[in-house]
Amino acid sequence: MKREKILTERIFEKLECLFSKVIFERNNGYSSNPKPGVDDIDHIIRHYSSKCARISIGAQLIPGQWGVIQAVPEIVLGMKKQAEMIYDISAAYKKDKLMSPEMLAGILLYSSTGDGYGLLSHDGDKCILNENHSLFELALNKVAKKIAKQILRSTLVRWLPGIGTVSQSLISGKVTRRIGASASDILTGEIEIVKKIETEADRSIDTDWLAENAELEMTHDEDGKS
Image (cartoon, rainbow, N blue to C red; front, top):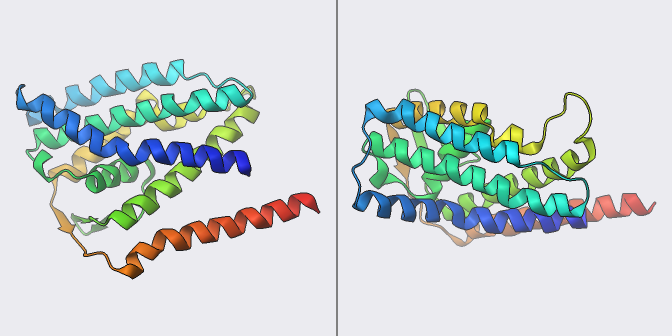
């Protein structure tokens, strides 16, 4: 459990700044270059799918601690490329000015897992974005923990027939194409942005989540000792 906690923290730290970094870099890039149009969306998805496929193929998890450490930057790099793809698609739909770290993360998470982690939800044909920093951090905490579990499990089952690496399940070309298609569907429709003023109760969400997970870790440790 200690190794999982350290890995979760490492992944969370990288994800926390990933989405704002993508927005900053792509926005600067478009300040001196023409933005894509709707007709370019298929090309955008193919372009990033090819990039992620190469990253996924190169992300060979080596059994042992070194393989675990090596996996993190490769997976985060793949997720960054997927986020860049989503931003470029938003630019094609002229919605890039609406992009915030919460929206970018919500679309990526929903498109890849079907779960908006409280950030993004559907209401009929409309998407609702909760632009709330506490929800944003909570979502990234959950995703980081999930990825850490997958990485650690992959180091054990890496060589079993029919079992792919965690990179293949998260950042392969096929997965990236699916994310691009889903993101395009979301961005072509109406998006309602709910900006909730955070209260002390909202800020306590992270504390409650951390306390709950700490309790679970203590339970696992005690089970291991018995």
